[in-house]
Image 1 (spheres, rainbow, N blue to C red):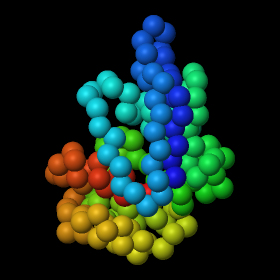
Image 2 (cartoon, rainbow, N blue to C red):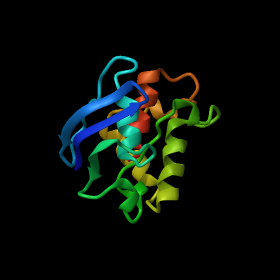
Image 3 (cartoon, rainbow, N blue to C red):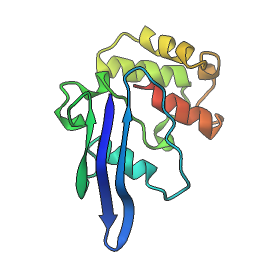
Image 4 (cartoon, helix red, strand yellow):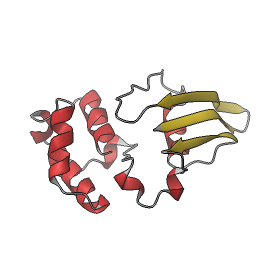
Length: 141
């Protein structure tokens, strides 16, 4: 489960995230939508411990991401589409992520089939539509 409670982050006079709260139950697929600059990436960076919030808390399964024993086995992240190697398929990228996390590589295939991207994952990463790339990033978890 993901739980964000009263999360805020400012950079000088600019408020990037202001008092955000939400819960995502385990096993659900949740869209995180907003305009450019709305604070989506900053919120995810705070969730994963890459950015320290000014106020509030961000928990995964009741713990901060950085306190999880093997965070990649609980929540996968890929916050920058340019991190996808242009010569690899989405499936290969997910198989590598699974191996690094200590999970069997076949888990990547299971996740891709679950979200309906089994065939799309055979494409080389570069020509994928940004929405497909974002879905693959979400599936790393």
